[in-house]
Amino acid sequence: MGFPGIHSWQHWLSLPLALLYLLALGANLLILITIHHESTLHQPMYYLLGILAVVDIGLATTIMPKILAIFWFNAKTISLSECFAQMYAINSFMGMESGIFLCMAVDRYVAICYPLQYSSIVTETFVIKVTLSMMLRNGLLIIPVPVLAAQRHYCSRNEIDHCLCSNLGVTSLACDDITINRFYHLALAWFMVGSDMGLVFASYMLIIRSVLRLNSAEATSKALSTCSSHLTLILFFYTAIVVVCVTHLAGRKFPIIPVLLNVLHSVIPPALNPMVYALRTQELRVGFQRLFGLGENMSRK
Image (cartoon, rainbow, N blue to C red):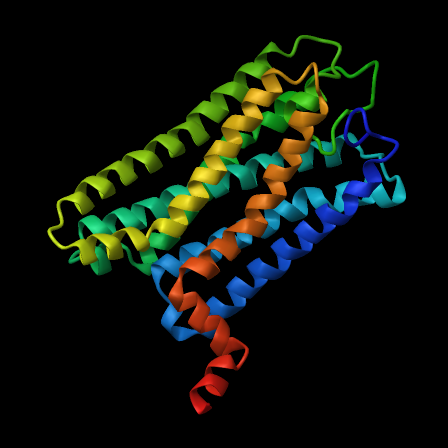
């Protein structure tokens, strides 16, 4: 049904959401093309950034076309199988994004705390292994979410007061007990996102401890600048998850707030991630200039 409480004018939100979606697609595709085109970016750190770009495109594309179809064409109907597929995809990409942030935190930890061993530890094989392990983890652990939802008995309402097929939004329409769905949803969130978040912040505590031991202020500043962009993004990502969870608990009074935040959390990070990395990473900026031929023009002048 879209955003609860504003059905009559929710279509006006389609323009900013469409612009955010186009920005997410364009910026992440630019990241991928630049990494592929620029040989100096063929490093594990940028491979992880490229994987994050693919995940961001997948996350945004999982929900935005359907939301825009609801707003523009009143295409509110969705089959149960399509709904369960979207439910699985959303949770998979969200878990994958959290997992990639963890892998990037490990990359920065090794680079700063063990710089001499970095090239032998963080290799292309390492990137492939951690990516496949995250895909396997998310793929297996999230299967029960749509499976449990499909086992519920839906016999009354068929209108979801949401813009997407969220697990709890769909199962709340069931006529039978959904305690197991709620329990698994909570356990999954704590196990996947909670453990990732804990390990990410633990790695940064170790990074900060190692950096503070450096005698040179210049070395300290350089070490912190190498992970500032990543730290900015993970703070935004995990803070947004906490805010979404809190607003869901208090969403009965103003149901539009958790729905709006849920949608924005699925489209703002994909649009924000490449912009932050582009602004904070010199190698990427140089790659963009060379891709568009700006570097050659500047050197000629």
